[in-house]
Length: 80
Image (cartoon, rainbow, N blue to C red; front, top):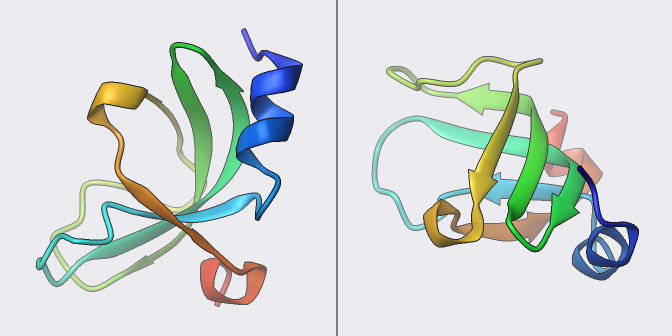
């Protein structure tokens, strides 16, 4: 369940993120934040580059805060 206050707080800078930006793999993923709660974040994959990624565009995922690393991105980056 999405917590409206948490969602508004987490999306103040942008609704778009790059997942695991410090990974050195050849696959990179961007997503649109769909919901957030004290437990974690729900997002939809909007872009995938490279090979060997485990995510596909259009998939919706939930990650707990403990298992999620991201940086904010622009809509242009996330939907190229």
